[in-house]
Image (tube, rainbow, N blue to C red; front, side, top):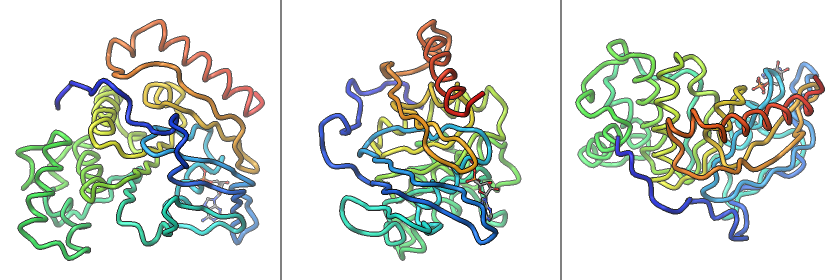
Length: 268
Ligand code: ADP
């Protein structure tokens, strides 16, 4: 993958433009009584890279799924700048923790799925899917089946599938949690380059302080029982972030800072 970044961050959040999406006093109570999310207010600016950080069970996935329209808030509202609902948006991509590929279809066909659902003509869909596979570093693997691909490669296919509609916003639910550390680092780097190139808003759920600091411009810390937002702070480090950044004193001190904020937030 191309290692060159553009010189300027893509976020327009600092420019004062209205947020791409606003979460307004959103709560979610499940049928069994669990209050998974309580009174969350959150604005996401176009082009921002934001991590939702917190321990297991603090409502990160539930919040992400509500933003995606995969679950409805019990109270409160999720408002999009253009007034459309999440359910109606072709410009929203979602990456699950598991790659969730169709085992009987090759990589190209898996990435073509969202285009087929939108009745994009087959030839165009093939071209767009192949282009996206190349962008995630899988040129030459178009005809490979999921069983022939490594965990990291399957996740790349999953990301290509989420990006093939060129979404304005990409929501990711601990997408790299099951991968080994070296593969995770590589995918973190490639994700940052994709974000920089494609200029989508990225919302990344993780329980890793290190991953959230490495990737994000901003970290939203959540705590459990009930799930709620406890802190929201910027990560003050320039892009590109790469291996040099990963081994820098700056990165270490940012991780220490974020870890302190997390501990404070979850009260331990
Ligand atoms: P996280 O992503 O931070 O690990 P979740 O959003 O998955 O947290 O879960 C938040 C809380 O809601 C947890 O206590 C979890 O057990 C509960 N929960 C999640 N989904 C459901 C569901 N479908 N029904 C009942 N409880 C749920």
